[in-house]
Image (spheres, rainbow over the protein chains, first blue to last red):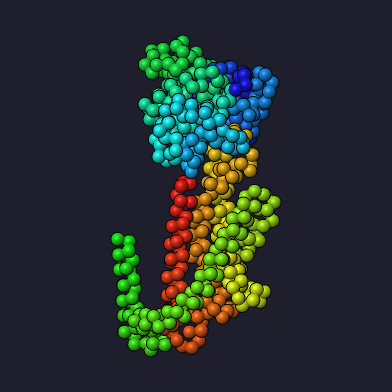
Length: 242
Length: 244
């Protein structure tokens, strides 16, 4: 893994001439989890996709820069709400997808380590359809880690999971990605309060930085300050919506 | 249970058939009854078998060639915008031409033998195969493509590892359609000009007012088509099921 740079996105976006988000500046600090919290349709996923270099359907006027001056492309790993596991491939094959797509030989020892770390060693030969939602998301996380990129983009990866599995996945992801520059896009104030080392609320007007709780992430679900932050974030979201 | 219901449906159809024959009292050269057709079938079993074999060979070669051509065309279309612009309209236009109209031409070009029938079968299945596989290739779930992009996959790798496997269920449904159409193509070819095959036998029997033999040949063709469809269905379950 190459050293992780700071990442700054600066600009505005329009869809068919209508503004999607006003000019904004968002900085992802090195080795930190930045949680971008917002309601539907404010463009938070667009920001993530712009960084990932994916189609957005919006016109972006601005730039995305890394503090080391290198291109961001090729240094990001991406994980979405849909686990995007290939249904015809086994767990082991899905984890190695990146190497296969680049025509490289996958590092099998590393794959096995990651699969073990995600507690999937009993499922290596299974197809995704045989797994539960939480297991599938763990495979997706293993695939993301297999890519070994300094910047990790998470687009509401846990929002389709039940409450318990979601909390487990948050812990697992926070631990596995603690040294990466992570952008987590979410609409869940509780998730942002648990995981964010930096929390930003996004609305049509722009982005508002919020004070994260002092405890190190991932915070306990019943940590008082985390719960207070969660409440404050929700208040902010509702005020913006009104 | 499935077998039982198929048997019941067959018996029911035979009863209706016999009922019509008995009620109308039509002469047997107009509408032969099931018993007579069965008897004729048994008496002519070797003759029918010989002609069935000819048709079966035409259909199977036609299926293989048509599938190969369709798959290659779909891949080219999916890979190149130019191919889509240049070829797709023609493809749709050829589908609008009645194959019946082409059959005499094919016989003129390829002769009375096997290849004009194979060509008919190919023509009739080429479009369903091409269009179903092509649709599948163009409808890759966009999330997979996003993921592949962040992994710096080449278009070739994406095609091979993602788009083709994701399109296999569509190809499977095209193949199943093709299995039903291919015998129709071969028989049309035989009608237009041949000296062998079930289509030829049907025409011959009809011309000589041997309506019972015509029925026997026709039912054999029906059974052959159903068997072919079942075999292809069976052969494509993995393809259709696993990629969903």
